[in-house]
Length: 224
Image 1: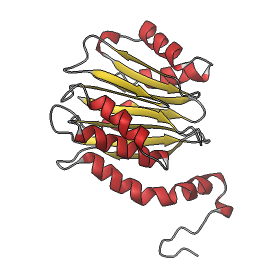
Image 2 (image 1 turned 90 degrees about the horizontal axis):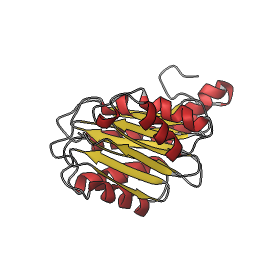
Image 3 (image 1 turned 90 degrees about the vertical axis):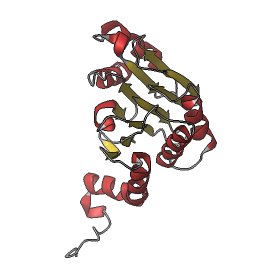
Image 4 (image 1 turned 30 degrees about the vertical axis):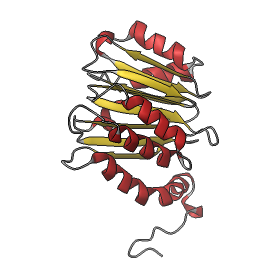
């Protein structure tokens, strides 16, 4: 019921996840990033414990492959889960249980891995990876373009209703966490519109958290 990618920006070290599904609020349950550590998508009959668990293992020094092995060894009902990860070096790994739904597969590229289940066809993850690889600019822009490519290649077997992107970079919280939890229109384009608004303000929101004295004005009525 889901297609996604986890990725790393080789220039900045930023991590990101982008995801879409026919299910509601997919990004709230399936997307995990941690600055300096990696990114994980935990999907297909989701166990939300597995995302933070994999990140903890990578923060402790494991590679993406070692962390996914740990997920496979210790996760409950792992035969129903699909978990993909990227580590701080850009290494990728995935576990897809044999009870993943419908057509399920994955594809990899430099600093990116994509996977899905209940897909329209087996080419969707490769289209996502190719879309990411062919794009340039901010990691958030590249995530959006990759998801558009996956949707154009067929996406999920049925209509998608939710989507999201999450980015982590240098600080202990996601610097962007944008979601469309339900729509009858295109959730990927809804998130893309939100990203267009948020992207120019991203650095300002981080600065306001770190030191509001050095932050730009808030641009709201009554702002001195």
